[in-house]
Length: 110
Image (cartoon, rainbow, N blue to C red; front, side, top):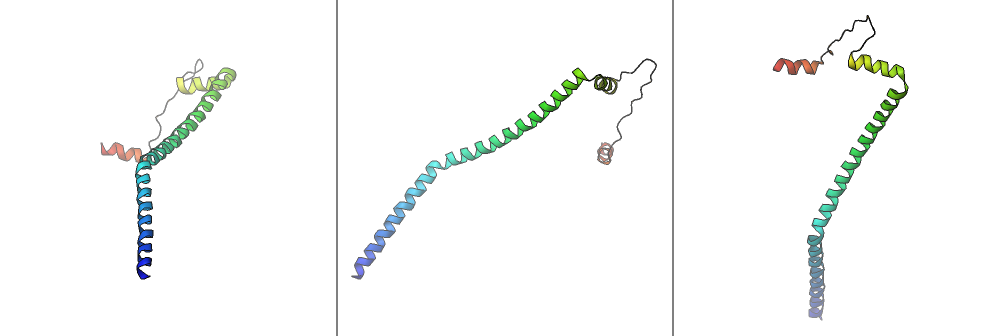
């Protein structure tokens, strides 16, 4: 009777080994697909972030375009700031921006 239980245990172990080997075979067969799906998910998140950034930029540019087309005060301010235009008789002074401490350190190292 003891020999029957040993063979039954060995039979169960054999089936367990076959099941584990089949699982390992399936895992090795589908692992590249799992990696590709993971890579594509990361790429999708990156593209979605880029789309959100560009949509925000697009909204800002559309607002700026609308202001340029409809608001003469905004147009005057842009012309004065960016193009250094002024009214007749005005003197325009341009100052370089004040360097930050980190900018001064890098300029001193050169």
